[in-house]
Image (tube, rainbow, N blue to C red; front, top):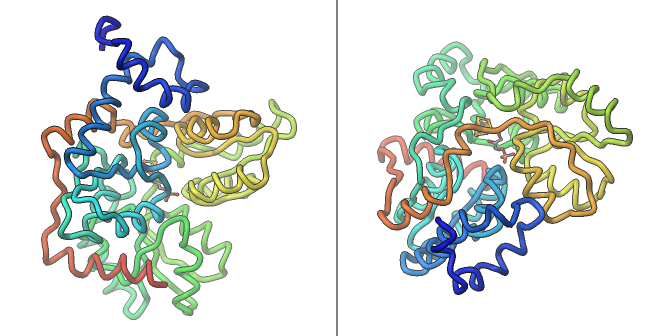
Length: 330
Ligand code: 13P
Ligand code: SF4
């Protein structure tokens, strides 16, 4: 938007929203966001739409247009509670698919169909069937970062927020857990359960090393390091705490460290920093290119045109839904 279009009216309407993000968005950049934000707020009303945003979305999305924010588990839970006719998922494709699985009669939109995930792309339904044949009787726990077709072949889903609870709820000494090798290794160490896994990795978290953590600590005395369990086990071992994106946010709110580094996607530090101006966030910046495909112009366009609607083959949807529901009921 040009400055000429940034009218006094628009400035007045969006001023309270700018107050939320002024610590992370310079005022000179606000005119570039204000018009889309204003239009999105109107479109949400006219479309009876709700926006669910993952913790990795950028602050102008997370703090200014989202109705519900959270980790994968919270977004799945909240998707079930909404009365809105339309759910727009500001996140990646597997999250939109999960919302659709749980809300088959609602329209679920994702602004960019290319917003994928390296974990979801690492495994197919045929791979899961082959593993089941190779390990008869061993339950298959599938991370939500997978396609509906992969979920359909599994016994139960999990997220990073409930993986331990789900694995322990099965009460067996051995499980297959797909497709994140590092999450599985971190969990095997935590639970003592034998875990057969798959060589899938998150392209954002696999880049962190134990050396990165040590260098950050050397340069920032008193630093508290929180890591996502998709990080390699050597990183989790060096960290003070490991947990889902929501668990990391809760840790910061509860413990209020003076200095903290979140070993995860870097927009999350911006989003949490907005709520904790007194905390110094050391930012080891790894961006998720898939999450970053979701933008304000993309969200505006999606609501204006009702694209792209997420659909799932009914033959796949029924068993995939069962795996997600089992997770939510566990
Ligand atoms: P959370 O469920 O912890 O939000 O993680 C989702 C994700 O994609 C992490 O990379
Ligand atoms: Fe997938 Fe990693 Fe991006 Fe999360 S951060 S969506 S796991 S690629």
